Image (cartoon, rainbow, N blue to C red; front, side, top):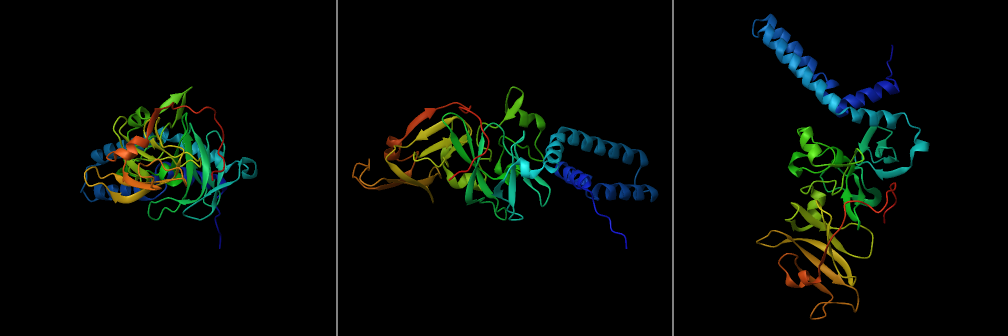
Length: 322
């Protein structure tokens, strides 16, 4: 028998339509139209009302497609780029367990050559590898990256899949708009420099499970939260997810752990601060101290607060984290 093998162009078009609006690929829209035509034939529906409703439906589909046409451009650019010239294996896909290719762009993105899937990366900062760290969302299993932005640098966790497929229950954030998010609302939450949209804060929403596990207390000034900075440096700090604000810990601190235990009134997580051998700054000289950051006077006495800039000292491509 005859076999039809889709061309690369056909695959990219289908993936692009599915990425922007699945109804353009799946038979749902056509089935709905056919059902309405059948209702007209049976006298169950009025022809004029069905025509008006259908035209409005496809007009909305067209407007949505035009507003998101950049996603199609990225997919074409990734699919028709020679990957050996575009980059190297960067991080693992949680769906296929294959490595995603890093394409420097512009725009920067991750590309799965086995599924023809493209994952956009937040512009404005530096994306680094974070080998072995997995997303906390059940059944996601994508390997996390690091997203560094600002001066001094603030570093946040980044899940490629969750950044591109945000859920309403996680709340709003900068970057990719959710399916039900108004385009104007998205633009208001982003900033542009030289006509280029950039993400200046945490690319993941504050209620994302990975962010929530690292949250120590709210940041009332920005409406965000303070999380542990995930940079690989020797200086520990907490950074705001929605402002260039940093809470610095002394250089004598060896390790910080965010615990599951919560303070009864504020519901903030307790943190455990461990000092380097012989360098404890605690009144009793103990090597560790546990408490709630906004309720514990000892922890507050260790903190130094600073306000930085959204901008990085210099830009660069992704690199390997430790």
